[in-house]
Image (cartoon, rainbow, N blue to C red; front, side, top):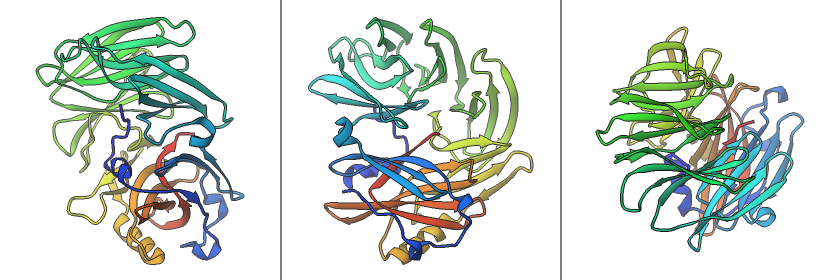
Length: 378
């Protein structure tokens, strides 16, 4: 059920410990207008705790919350989902799944203890949620690859099962948005499919069949569903759908030297004003695995930020190696946010947030005593 799809998050399971220590003026790589500093919320963790860090760029203010102490969120939680202002942390213990929901703005929390107990009837491999329901993706019976969804209504405790497809080859993470649960999988012939579930009626309203083309899914700021699909690492079909009617709004072909994986890519890419702000993957063996990039649909140009030079600059200033851990594009400030971790010892993990302009200039390094793992969408 682990929702992290990026390699750097998996690395965090073997690194260390968190406290907060923001930068002072001498630590700033560049002097920039305060109006250019972003506001953001990020989740991070160490061996003991999970943290939420709220940062306001102008004037510079911040809040740190220990979610393990406040909400009993174990750092070994399986999945973090976000629906509007509510974060849902799924966990597993003693044969049962539980969840803790936290409004990241107000701090209000709800505990959903042992909402599903494991049995031989189903093999559960992911969890998701809407505002008032939980969803479990499973194979049933255990040992088969018959793909189903269990819906648990939190207001009535009603449970409904729905079989999506029999004998599937592989499954991918789901994506929920405003009454639609988007579920990507490979069928028994290894064709990529996307099932769209209406969560209000619990009806499967459409199944897209992409054949051998890999579908990568995101929701834009207007609430439309965007799907990239292609058969190579560079040529893509870019299609925008109305999330309610599933009618096509726009279609376009584009080419970019980046492989996007199947399923949701919300943490890897966003489209704003005819530009794709995405996470570029560096060819191995690179000293770093990834960095920000911008593709302009109008000019058909691709700008890749020199993240290797930025990482070297930060490492020289800190006198230590860093490992990049999280990525986001902040539309309000028009900056990229890159989280990083520093393994100081077997028991100590520190980190920080790099603010980078669209031109590839390092604007600020806010040092933290923890490793950021995920930026929260505001």
